[in-house]
Image (cartoon, rainbow, N blue to C red; front, top):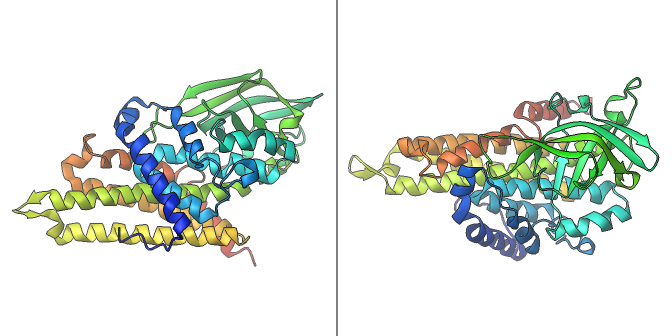
Length: 387
């Protein structure tokens, strides 16, 4: 499509085609049913792992593909064009738990967790938010107290993507005392596995969109986590999480672009088929303007995203760039899906056509891994960072 202005290497084209073929064969035939039933199909995890999609950013020594960030995002966008729910599984797994263990874990943790995670034998999740700590994530209250060879965790985590099926959950908890709170500097990150005593899966959220991606609460009731599962410094876990969210925001931007692209492709096809006043509606300037605006914003989103990805791979600070990409792409997804529903008219409002689902799926990209408001705050702060 004309919005695909990204120059790709031969390897990137092969991986893009592999992702597209996988999504069309293994996911597309079942999307409507899974969405209607809010059903998660566990078998797709191993299938994605077998193709390398769950270890794309991991080095080969940990059974990963070791590709650059742009290549990973190209594959993620292709998955998202077909199904945003599968894309968020892929994004969270690749961007957050695996990268945190790779960057901040010790070698024993890398060997124990990264290889099965790359192969799709162990799904990863990220547990930062709490019922009373969303955008103000540093206000979390889950407590971790050292007790011999274990840390004892008590608290509740919210909005955990894949939390009901994950084998390795990166959970943040306060390691400072209740009387000596150090804010962001008093939080540790723990690798929680579901077999540990005191681990409970709580409420499954009944969501507007991404309905085949399970989002749950996790309850820690005197959860005993071995000290070997502490990630790095017990006071630096929140800092690790914030650094990793830069990766996550790039992934969500790619997901949003995929949703927007699916909306554009559906609307373009429909506008050529739908006859009103004895002519295809694509001949009307009002429709042309909508399609043109959608295509332009998608191309701009992709440019922002891959500019940030290249900067990240060069080792540059991408705090602002990742927030810009996530902000613009997520708002593009909402714009494009809204325009697609409008082009479809009444048919866009019913579940017989895909744009209704795309519209629902798009909204969360403006919310999770940092709301649009938080992204604007981050961008503005970076403007003054050198003052």
